[in-house]
Image (cartoon, helix red, strand yellow):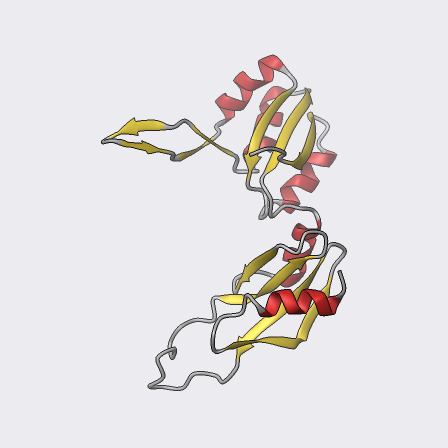
Amino acid sequence: MTPAEALSIAEKHVDDGMVIDVDAFRESRYGYFFGIKWEKPPRPGDDNYGIAGGLLGLWVDRRSGEVEELGSGADVDYSLEAFDRDLHRPMDVTVVTVGDRKRAANALLRLHMTYVIPEFAYGETWRIAKKYTVQDFMRAFDSLPVRFERQGLFCCMEEIDALAMNPDLTVVIQPHVGE
């Protein structure tokens, strides 16, 4: 996919009153970032006055054409690297080996991984995420390898890099395949 093709895709995702900021264009290994700005900045009295920008830009995956939004709180360099590492997708974390169990559990805790046990109440199925605890990890280590599926790790690049250097465990992190 060329930058021009990606721009055409991005333009279809821009809200009314907003335009692509060509000066903010960035290319990364697996995609393109297009900044977004007001076509005409709102002034006092306008309907949109006082609305925070909210959207910093759009990232277009050059492999699939998928479009992801970057919020205004995002650091562009960090986000581009995270997208290139596919961390915007659900990831599976597989623990293959464990040395010191307590230190390994504490290292995994920094990924803020969660699980869901669906609960039926009041005629509805509730899916409330619960964070794994050190005790959960310690129990899981009893049957290695153990996989923690569909984890959101976009904000955990530093922690993932630290895990790669951690002598207390061997971890494989890869995009989730399946539903």
